[in-house]
Length: 314
Image 1: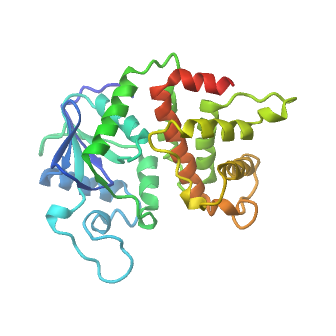
Image 2: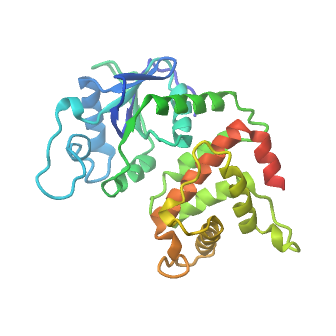
Image 3: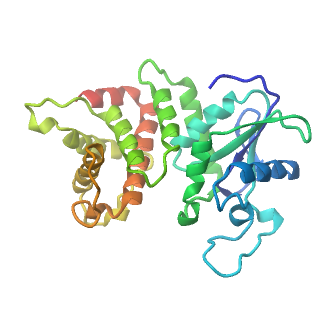
């Protein structure tokens, strides 16, 4: 995205429940994560009504009421506990764009809904948003108990580290910037779409695999993915979480089934999670695994790009 000559503003962070240990966290110079002020909340509500999908365009249901919303009488949160948080910034919005790339790679993701630029009370201002991403991020919130997150100093430290790594990374060695853009583009697809799963799998293959030799049965994409992820997992700060698939299910079996799901989608089949794909449970569990794995591999690429390049060729 090109730099814009703006006077600062704020970005609405949709999924923060509370800040732990501090009222304000600095993400980058002149970029602070904090609770929204009354004029900012008014702007957020106006744009939620305009752009969010039902039922979230009724802003109270998500950001002002106690969760989960499962029947009964809704309970309104005190104003001091309502979930309106922003990243306030000065200067252009370029740093914010770069921070959003870091969010997409972080174990704890912050989801920016839209950005108000040139915002100063009643002065003229504009809004930057990506309707598809906003719509599909909110689409399944009522079915996702993990959407809202508590943000700690440790989370902020990790985001700042990823942001700094992205800033100094040598893109000519391994173009992580292009891949982070693709991650953002995938969020414009519905979460329940198999094509979203396929997109993450394509990024994973581009990071760790090479075109297999037809005459070598040990060089298949499936075998490459299983072997290389086993090697990388021991180097991840946050190892891949296989717990949802059962303690006794081998990693090799899980990834073989993940590849079966990938092939089914790629070749126009209809996935059946009651039969051959049963150990995955459902699309949501498979998507969570591939998403977390891609992010972990990309974070490793920022730390050890030469390792990833060597691993891809072996």
